[in-house]
Length: 120
Image 1 (spheres, rainbow, N blue to C red):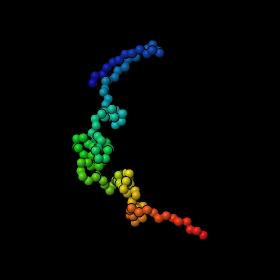
Image 2 (image 1 turned 180 degrees about the vertical axis):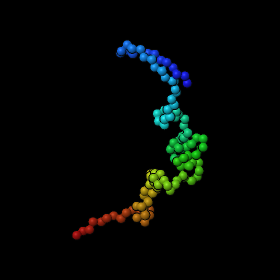
Image 3 (image 1 turned 180 degrees about the horizontal axis):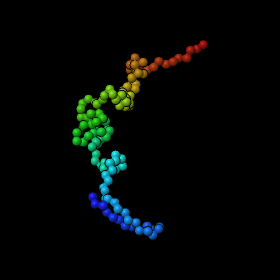
Image 4 (image 1 turned 60 degrees about the vertical axis):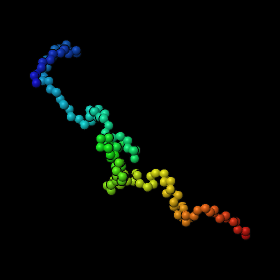
């Protein structure tokens, strides 16, 4: 790197300055703004089974549910993740009426007995 001489005029005091400096390229290593500008490739896309953007295109597996594996991916160290997809988080079309039907002995095809007001 060669030192360079630079002359410039100051606008306020009408004096000429001479500055000697070496041209050095500074590589600033940063994890923030400059790195985020380079992120334009997608490694994950939407999964067929769970719907999350977790299906790895090159690996062809979902990082969330494990698709195309037959068993759903879950681990005991992820209790919160298990709770997000367990029984009771969906519509429960069958299960929501089960407790009421159990209480009545799973009766079907009958009508409730009419309540007759007592005459006193």
